[in-house]
Amino acid sequence: DSGVTQTPKHLITATGQRVTLRCSPRSGDLSVYWYQQSLDQGLQFLIQYYNGEERAKGNILERFSAQQFPDLHSELNLSSLELGDSALYFCASSVAGANTEAFFGQGTRLTVV
Amino acid sequence: QQQVKQSPQSLIVQKGGISIINCAYENTAFDYFPWYQQFPGKGPALLIAIRPDVSEKKEGRFTISFNKSAKQFSLHIMDSQPGDSATYFCAASSTTSGTYKYIFGTGTRLKVLA
Image (cartoon, rainbow over all chains, first blue to last red; front, top):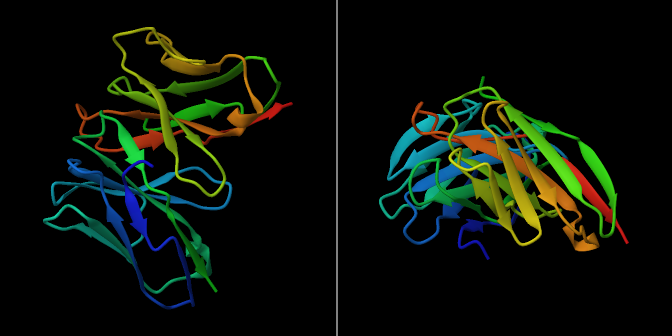
C-alpha cells in the first residue's frame, strides 16, 4: 500500500458526461501529480500541484481541470467525455518537488461508453 | 529534450537470468532517476532510484547503473524470477530547471520464464 488513495476505483460513464476523480496523497506529502495511462501505453503527465498551487502542466486537454484543496487532497475533473478518454488515471504524491520519491495510487479506471 | 528513451520495448528472460533495461535522456538538468514496476491493473510502484552523484546503486536483486557522461542509466535485475514479470518504467526529473514533473520512458514489458 503506497498510502495514496484514489476514488473511485472504477467509473463507467457515457460520452458527453462529466466526472470527478479524487486523490488523497500520503500523509505529509505536499505535491500531487496526475497521469493518464491508456491501454498498454506509457504514463502521460497531466498536471502537478504543490501545496495548493499549480506548478506544472502537461498535455492536459482543455476539457480537463484539476485543483488541490487546503487539506491537500486533489480532484481531477473530466468533462464532455469522449470514447478516447477511457484510460487509467493515476495520482501520485511526493513530499516536495519532483526530485523526491513519488508514490502512486492504484488508479481510477475510466470507461466512456 | 524532455524525453526519456527506454529500450527494449519487451524482454523475455529465463528464470535465474539477468534482465537489463536501458534508458537515455537529453536534458542535463535531470537530477533524479527512479524506476517503477507496474503489474497489470495496478499503480506503478517505486522500485529504486538514483541521483547523478553516484554511478551505481544496489537494492537486493535490483541495481541501477548510471553513466552521466553518456546520459544513460539502466536497471539490472539479477536472478530474475517469474514474479518479476511486469512492466518497468524509467523516469527522470529535475526541479532546478523548473521541470516539476517526472518524465517517464515508454515502458518495458518483462516476462520471466519459469
